[in-house]
Length: 317
Image 1 (spheres, rainbow, N blue to C red):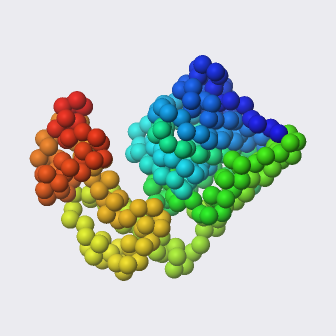
Image 2: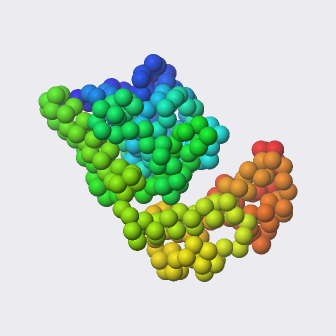
Image 3: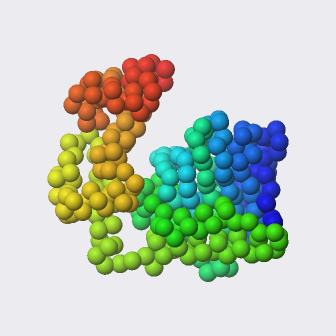
């Protein structure tokens, strides 16, 4: 069986420096041991992460031009392009990223919990050979769109359809005695994942009523992301985007993996953390981010960040 190559050496120093599709990064030993890299034909590289590392993973690096599909089967992660917003991932979500030039960013995964992630990368030339193209035009189609429009770099997250979760699971659990068979199987699975992503969010994605509902759900997310200080009730948000309240709640949870209220709270707390770090007072931060009760704000912030807002402001400012 082709078990792949370790992502980093035994002492966790940077590996794959100069690899055409992977950034050179330094990984903690427990994360290095939980990952394997498979270099396949047609400019495809597949990285599998599976284990329960004790430490948290936090890396910053510059990656080469490529097209990437990542599926988080278990665990939690976050990632961002330099100068762009943070993309928060939960189990069952997928990410698409593509750039025509090297781009810098950061990636983090929480330790102390089972983590399973499949990362499939195509060279831009390999993507063209199999019939795809750099899908920067997909900007705006994702529930979480953290792209950098000015640099034509795409980074988008969306709930992975069942078919994509199945493919990622197949990749992680594949077990063949013959190396050639294993490589062919993994290459076929990488292409299957590409086809599913194109069907889900690409130009061939469903149109009509389902597309209109998706557009309105994305509009609801943008309203909360951009105007988080407003008093958004379900009724007010449903009216703003032209959806029924039940359809808004059910559709948003299905797409985002969390409720409207959970999303709004997380957006507000992320904005609050940034304001406090800039030296804004706790009271002004609470009011700016839509909290009408200072005690409620302090309780919610501590639950999310582990410290009171005043302490966060003190150590970050």
